[in-house]
Image (cartoon, rainbow, N blue to C red; front, side):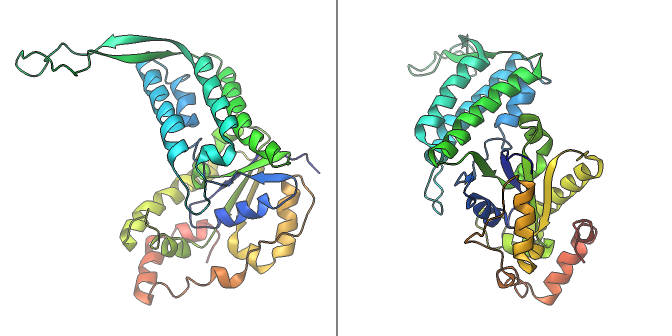
Length: 319
């Protein structure tokens, strides 16, 4: 059995990512980070930063990337409260671990800072003098350029280990599991960050995914709006999968429906991939919890969705 390694859970959203992450976190050796962190794939996250300080580097691109990461780490993640889980991201991993990682990052990523002048006082106001509170300059950061990308990746990995690994240690477990659905679209970067990571991609019938999105306040409220949201996700992933080399990668692609149909066997296969012994979990996948959306769409609407996703449905392994 392979040794356990970090686990990332991925999917389109509304496909069972939370359920399978909860189950993985019930294993005595694996700690589930109890909120969706979005630290890596989101705009301004670690994936964007890695490109900005390597292949896309110039001082302005780098300064912008650092500003967005700073906004994410010091404003959004510590304040975005998950009412269902009862945590912000910093609370979920432990405030000490979180701020230790954030504080160390700046010294490792920033070469220097300076005050850059803004356009002249009164600029754009027909030569009128600037107001007493109008800023005359702004702080600009010159980021380090990493010609050796692996050096930057090691810094980012250490920050993630401090946060997520610290949380796992506090929970008395040796490895962690992080769930963000759009991990689906950055698997190459996840494996660059952790070459031995296990990625669990959970799928659900695309029609059910569309129906579930309709009930979410953060998603479009119309069928066509949801189709405009989800179809590019499927297309991007299918395009990636067509050329991806998964040789020697720890990757599981599972259907929620298959998990529900034969949970004990599927659970055992899942834990084997993750490098841990099979254990009975309190949470499971149950058929009735997956079929409750079968009647949500009327016949005409369902036919419309099936036509719109006519090539996606079989490509995802569904009839």
